[in-house]
Structures are given as structure tokens and as C-alpha cells.
Amino acid sequence: MPHYKKPDAGSWTQHYPELGTAPVDYTDSIDPAFYEKEREAIFKRTWLHVGRVERLPRTGSYFTKELPVLGTSLIIVKGGDGKIRAFHNVCRHRGNKLVWEDFPGEETEGTCRQFICKYHAWRYDLTGKLTFVQQEGEFFDLDKADYGLKEVPCEVWEGFVFINLNPQQTLAEYLGEFAAGLEGYPFGEMTEVYSYRAEVGSNWKIFIDAFAEFYHAPILHQKQAVKAEAEKLIGYGFEALHYELKSPHSMVSSWGGMAPPKDPTMVKPIERVLRSGLFGPWDRPAIDGLDTLPVALNPAGHRAWGQDSFEFFPNMTLLIWAPGWYLTYLYWPTAVDKHIFEANLYFVPPKNARERLAQELAAVTFKEYALQDANTLEATQTMLATRTVSEFPLCDQEILLRALHKEVGDRVKEYSDASAV
Image (cartoon, rainbow, N blue to C red; front, top):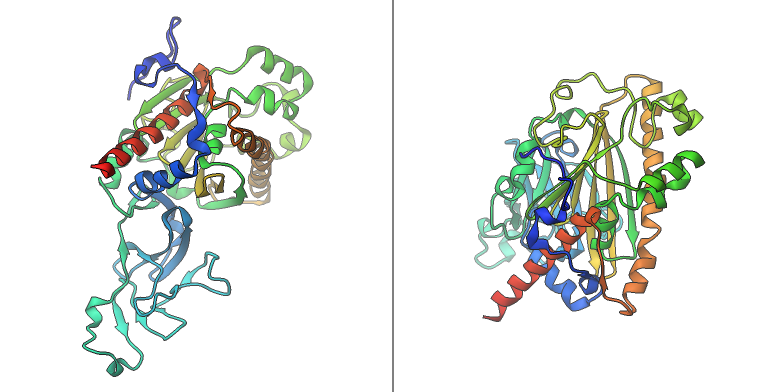
């Protein structure tokens, strides 16, 4: 993993000449036909993160995942052999959705010994085999071995569960050097989870764009700081510590997360009392794996390092904070101008009430900032849809945006060209 900083001359973008520096065409975020090609060329052919192993603590633990972008619903389940498997959530008899509760469009989770269809009671074991057919003698030459659940490739990296409808590579090969450089981080120790989920009226890439650059932070989030500090931040602007691309993935490393802040005027009274805030609890948890960081973290080796944000293409952000917690963002398209946004914050389980309150303060502070980021999205989408302007200049701090839109465009073109042959 290279350790370099931006030279005095040139820019981060110029480290990657294949990106160019021209304005970027955002038609890819408003064109319904392009969106349908994205579904086929990208989402149906790449590894997608669907959950953590902690959601499957024992044999028979399962959860469902609704994935409109793939046109399916999946069951993720842990078998008696300890293996995690994924199946299309469809009964092989008449196509009924197999696992659901009161409302078939809602996700569910639980523990069971077998899956039983609500319609005609066909049963399947935890490996997907069909084990029982109601009135089996009424069928014609039915071999149960031919009618198991349709399995979907499923692999696990560092406790993160991924699925892929049509894998071109193993998960490890796909995630590449960034993932290899993060192995050993104590993700499995951080099992206290706070989750947010919302339907957003924008293209999925627009929200990734919002989180993949911090150029906006001194402006959009200025009211979160005291006036004098906000004015200083606006005057300085923003400069990340490090950017790096390993196609199709990318990362940005930033300052922040210093605990406690040296300037007491920068924090609110409740933050001083609970020793927590946007950057998470100030007191690092006492667990193995935080003192010696994996090689992918803080690649610039900067003393003011606060967090690294990894964009695993196409729709997963993994953001690791220096004080010892992490979060994930997932962006699930439902239409060209809509998606489901999911955020999960992971902490080491608290040992007392103060630690619990510190985590809750971090979670609600995160929500406030995320709402500020999300507040721009639908306004952006509606104006892009006018097609008044389609190309936009991106600065050097927006290199991850440039890389994302190029990667999407390249993959759609490659798929379209191959389909035309």
C-alpha cells in the first residue's frame, strides 16, 4: 500500500490520468434506459453486501433481503454446518414468496429448523433441499431432489456477508487490495449497532457523491460549529489527507476524530459531559486490534488522522473512525430517481450507562449531519431532470465522484457492446 502525499505541483486527480479533468456528464443519473443497463451490467454481476454475520448467531438464524434492483428477494441463513447460504425467496411449487410475515414486501428475520411455505406447506431444510411435499402422491413423477431452493453465490469477508447473482470473480479477488489491507481490524468486536433506513428521492450515485467528498463540509455543516470556528473552516476550505483508487474501488483519508478536542469551544456542553460527538466516543475501547492498525488505514501516516472512507463498488461505503468504531452506508436503487439508503453504526458493546449514552450521542449526531447531506439530494435530482445542464466541473477534492461515474459508464458501455454482438 503506497504511502505518499500530494506533491506541491499537480493534483490528486492527475495521479490518475485515465480519469481526465473535463466536466462530468450526469445524464447517467436521470436516464431510465441507462438505469436499466446499470441493473444488468453492474448490480446483477457484482458482489453486494447484505448484512453482518452477527445477524446469524446460531444454526437456523436467517434474515430476508428485498432487492428491487435485482428483481428478487433473498433468504440468508446459517446452516448446521456453520456455512452461510443465500437463496431466492421463492417456493418451487407455485412461486409463492417463501419467508415473510404479515406484509410480503417487508424484510424479516428469525430462527427456524426448516422453511415452510404458507401456501401449500412445502418444506425446505437449511441447505435448501426440498424435504416434504403435501400430498406428494398427487404429483406426477416428482423427484424432490430436483426442486430445492435456488441458491445464490454467497461469501463472507471479515464478517461481512456478500451475495452475487452472477460472479465473475471470488469475493476476495473482487474486493482486492483495500480489503486485504483491512484484514485483522476488530470488526467482530463491534457488535452494538444503530441503524437508519430511508427512501430517498434521488439516483443512488447522487447520495454516494454526497458522502464521497468533504469539500462541502465547511459550508453545508457550518452551523454545527461555533461561529468563529465555522468562519475559520470556510476560510481554510477542505483538503483530505489522502486519496487512492484501486479500480473499481476507492478511498479517502481525512483528519478529525481527535479526542478530546483541544479547543473546548468546538464542542457542545453535552459532548463534553458524555465525551462523545460526531466522531464517536472520545475514549477508545480497550480491545485488541486498535493499537496496531492494518496497513490500509491512515495511508498517509498523518498524526491528525481521523477516519478512512472506503467506497466498495458499486454501493457500499465502509468508514472506519480513529477512536475505534465504524459504520457502513448502503445505497439500494429502486428506480432511476429513487433508492433506499441504509446506515449502520457499529460500536464495542458499552460496559456502563455513560458509555451507552456516549454511543447514543454519536448516533444521533451522525443522523443530524446525514440529514443535512441528504437534504440536498432531491433538489439536485429534480434539477438534473430538467436537463438544463448535464455536464458539471468537479474539483480535485471530488476525485472519488469522477471515478464512480467513469466506472459506471465504462461497465455499462462494455455490457452494451457485448450484448450487441
